[in-house]
Length: 508
Image (tube, rainbow, N blue to C red; front, side, top):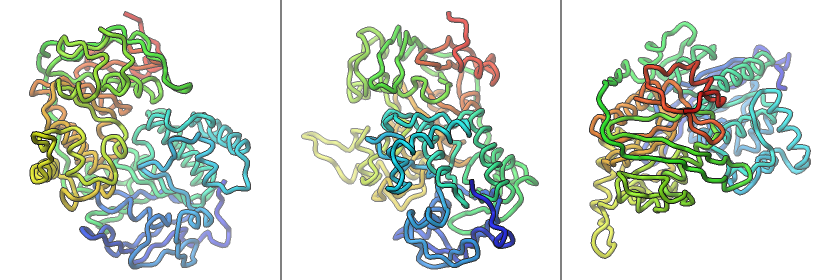
């Protein structure tokens, strides 16, 4: 466990002076100064694209600055890569995970610890750390079988195994349940009490107020404010971040229409040893309603989404219907042609191809730019991307920008916009506002509500209870591959949902 060195107790753990990073279309960091004391939990607050992740990657050595100086424990350092950063005592949990899908959890962790440690020892250390901090992780499990929430736990455990003096967390709670968040906060407070400094990036303002003791605000790549978040309200923090109060959502009650998506007795065995069997799933989503699916990650949400989207086509005939058409064995493309679109929880790699431009990424699910003979009308393709960028306020250099160059929140806005703009009959979306700032969160949720008001049936799978309570007309809870009976929004409470997450519901 990290401890504060007595000779350095009065010296800042981290000091940045004049850090600047330019890209062809944007200045991501513009002469940024930042000081983090030993044992301090320091929040970095800003909209998507404000430059937060770039600055943290500079500290971690994943990105080199164009100008400025980094001091660590009072000494000027030139961090040329993550390995050097880890040797100094700097660990980072990225918003976009850096795990190899084909390797196990233990093998992924082992890669960052050096060749002197055996795989068996690493697996044991993972299990011990997971037990000590209440972060459930299976060392032998292949990463490709993990949900986003489970992958996040792996990243946190890997960072903690480095016994860091400075721990950087980029949206660490975006897909954690409230109880898991509380356990993580206990871990972070213990680390800080023992001298570890923590830089904490989050768009959840209530978390920053509850956890952090200092805060630096970025806007447009520049420092625009500093404060003690414990003395601020969520409204004042929001104003510091976006320059205004966020819009308030309007969730009006309306009568649902005819069933659009119906699932009857869907039972599918797991497709890998660490997956979850789907058992007798039944649900119905009506036109003009939002049905929310709550639950702790790893309880079958990934498998359910794969069956509904057409990625997994093992469903028995007659178990999945779209407007009375049996689509149980249809491909994802066939389902899209019938009006079913979906947004996966993994943005890079599944929602978008990282090395392709935004214009090219429209072709993944949209056919408007494709003409007779499968010719691609590039002008129409770019126009579609430009329209989505404009309508959903995507901060980017334009349609030719690569997907991997966008911040997580801006890429999410583009993907959500691409699917909503298709005007689907049914939209299935997983973790719609994962890692998205407060302004973009309201924007995405408002777009989903507008889609529902226009008559679309929307199924939202989310681990954000507040999000589901804000959006959904009805809720179901997923536990161990089974689905609870639906409950109206008015009857849904955090306590009741939490109880049902353990499978404790009266089966209808």
